[in-house]
Length: 599
Ligand SMILES: Cc1cc2nc3c(=O)[nH]c(=O)nc-3n(C[C@H](O)[C@H](O)[C@H](O)COP(=O)(O)OP(=O)(O)OC[C@H]3O[C@@H](n4cnc5c(N)ncnc54)[C@H](O)[C@@H]3O)c2cc1C
Image 1 (cartoon, rainbow, N blue to C red):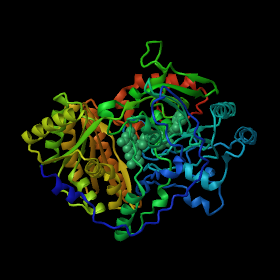
Image 2: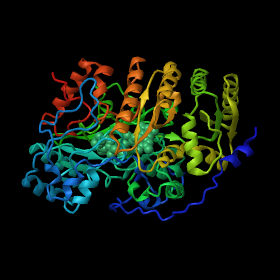
Image 3: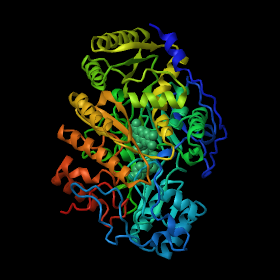
Image 4: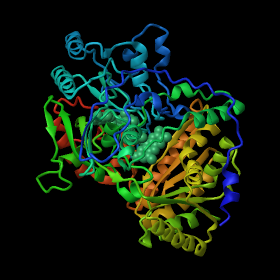
């Protein structure tokens, strides 16, 4: 294997020009670390540190959407009284709709409720314009906002959440739960104003049960923070939706942007990254889902505050249970429309003894997809199979000064014992070579592995840096594995003939792929073209018995596809559940269930 040659190609030659990265958006109190650890007598205790300071979670500046009502700021009009709002609040969705903007309605929040919230939340509440604007603004979503929340509350306990929700319910005021705001489909927007419940102060690890391999956490903790905590115990939580990149990488991307356009501002990228609560609420997954499953498989139970303020625990701590309706799974993926998650018990995994990271190039994207499928069919339990198209690889080369072959590329991770990981690697190398694969390289040395895997980790950010002034529409279709090659090939034809820059990145082992479509937000035609491509891929996936969203969720953006995907009876059933649990429709209204669904 010519790994050393490859490694030298991977090494970045770019020197950061702009190293000053501001990370001071909202300094929030970091919750004290108090954790009960059970069954770990012989294990090294974790370091007690302020996690908040050690991480630099970066949100997606390049794709941050805009507030359509920005101009109202200057004339003194309340943002929540912006004209042109459809007072019915029901104008998006429905079959075939191509709208990307939810029109909201807004009612004044009663002073009585504000007074109650002040008593409940004390100093952890604000009506400050900047914070409301920040929470109402799309952070990582290309959807536009028509309103901002009236009040932001930062509860510190389940009891506070319960009181807040009960009070809002009494006054029929909308609530939007808020985690890391990394969701992509407009999930955290506040089209009807109301109260935004920012959960990021609730980030305690409540108990770690080493012998049971589970952990009980509050919802505001980030998955990276959790993994930092778990590492000394030899355990980890295997879902990885958004990787906050480190300062060096941030400045590399930034330096490139400075050199080319001079406008990517990493200070816009402050934020806690994806939180466990938000990850539950979106039923998220990531690159490791092919091995460990999605949030659906990795949550043991939840505690949830319902719309009337009642607290429900959805299950025991047993790994499996046949006791009644599965309320845990009902809440997973409910996107804050059924309740506010206040506690999560998560299944953990042992950090693998050994791993190998491999990479291989292909002449066409279909060849690469075929090899991903063949690998899965071989029965090998890969822990990651990620596919990058040539546009994505080019972005990495440009952003990070690398010299990778600009062709469709598969990246693998194999885990287990040393012998088993190597055996898997060699089997996949054979599969790849039989199907037009070339330049198969692999790494076992920790530094070399890090260097290789960094390519995948930085891929999206490199892509955004190609056009720092543009927004990114990130698509998320998923199909049964046997259709993946066909779907990707058909999509690539369409994407390649578009005038927009489109890069493909896939969790290929799950049949899930994303396209990052870069468009100029000031050019309506470009936005429409991005939307057209998105539509094309969603409908192609639905025609292949797939889904409009493999992992990002519905928010407002995917509502329009649900009738075709699920059928009206399924949507009516969802609406009945919603109406039973939230009769006043206060929980994240205007999201997930299309407004035209009636029962
Ligand atoms: C660059 C990038 C890459 C990404 N890659 C992936 C990927 O590989 N896989 C993947 O699955 N996702 C991915 N995502 C999407 C995103 O990270 C996930 O959707 C994530 O799960 C959202 O978590 P969050 O804490 O940011 O939630 P938020 O965005 O804050 O909220 C998401 C939804 O959950 C609700 N919510 C938040 N907290 C609670 C709570 N405590 N109780 C009830 N409801 C709540 C909100 O109301 C909202 O509806 C990516 C996003 C970006 C920007």
